Amino acid sequence: MVTGMKKIKTALITGASGGIGLEFAKIHAENGDNLVLVARSKEKLDALKAGLEGKYKINVHTIGKDLSRNGSVVDLYDELKTLNISVDYLINNAGIGDFSLFEVSDWNKLEKMINLNVLALTHLTKMFLPGMISSGDGKILNVASTAAFQPGPTMAVYFATKAFVLSFSEAINEEVSGKGVSVTALCPGSTESGFHAVAIGEGKKVKERSLPSAREVAEYGFRAMMKGRPVAIPGLMNKIMTTSVRFLPRQLVVKAAGIIQKNKH
Image 1 (tube, rainbow, N blue to C red):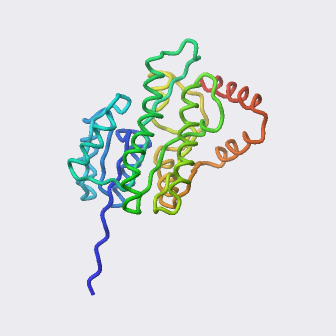
Image 2 (cartoon, rainbow, N blue to C red):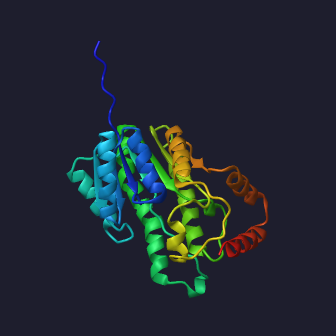
Image 3 (cartoon, one colour):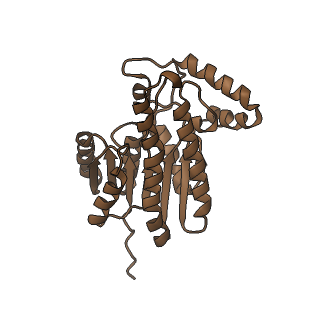
């Protein structure tokens, strides 16, 4: 008896040139998935493409694009449609932060953050979700943060964008229940990656406990996505923190968050 071959699936990963996004690319490659990798630096993506294709015998398509720019998501979607590439896994990983008092913050950086962390993520989900529902199969992972669970003085807009990602992901996951599709919000705490360099500036140090690696966070997120879990919080202390804030007065949570943020920098 001839059995059907396993379908090779495709994962679209944003922010794939480094950190957690890079590790997601490696994990999906190890799983035998074809890849669409998106980041601003096509040079970095092409170097990654050569290594992954050679090692895992998969197809990797790279797209150098700044997703914070207006129209970039439509351009990305149209390019894949032209190439007849369907997406089975959407990993909305791209995101940036900013450490500053809101009153003196750089508006251009804040606007770019909102465009990338919120608008691009939402638009990508909007573009690719209908195809997943139509096929009755698909998984979306949106990278939020433990920042999603409370306000964050000195990173007010960043924390707010991640609160959006968490709320949005949980709501859409409920909407697609029973349709063969799931949406997972991955909520890591601080992680060894290039995030802080962008948020506070190159060369500055962040006072932080021993951090989990980007690989550990990506592996945790991948397992949660494959199981269809709506919210994934890696690390026991992160789970305790995000749970405890629900039972404390909001004013106390905000003050405590402000103290923690100041002690990091």
